Structure formats: structure tokens, C-alpha cells
Length: 108
Image (cartoon, helix red, strand yellow):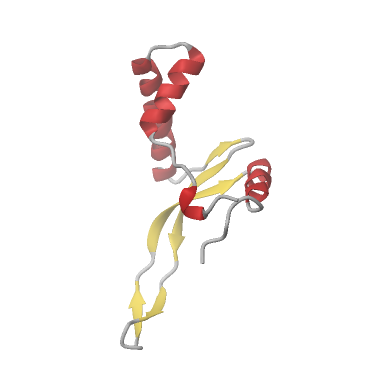
């Protein structure tokens, strides 16, 4: 079983390299396409719209609610709400992620 800290992460450069290899297009073209894709998601979400990618998930802007948190001195400290970037996985992706839970140790 893999520990949580043993999970590999992917860099943008690695994704570009693999996209170039798999499609046979030059690396610079793969990088341009990925940059355009990410820019379009960002612009759409910042405009207040959702980006829905069937089978993958939905990107959207949301608001973190105003609230209070207990400080180190035990007193409640207020914090303001703020805008957040949200991703909700599609059901299929969520099911596949659920399958991973049997092979990854939980974070304690």
C-alpha cells in the first residue's frame, strides 16, 4: 500500500512532454495548446461562468464564508470571506478516486 506522501505529482512540463510524445506534435505546440486550455479555464471562471468537462469535472468560482476561528490564545478571531477556485470531479472520476482509497494510507 502506498503512503499518502509517496504519491507522485505531475508537473506541467511533464504533462507537456507526454502530450507531445502521444500526439506526435512538437513540444512547443503541445505547450501552447496546454497554455491556451488553462488560460481559457481561468478566464471563464474569473468571468463568473462554469467550465464543464464531461467525465472529468466542473471548474467554477465560489465564496468561502465569513466566520471565526479559535486562535492560539483560545479567543475566537473573525476572518473575512474570500473568493475561491473550486473543482468538482465528475461522478466517473470521483468513483475512480474512490477506488484509490483502498491503496493509499490515510493522512493522520
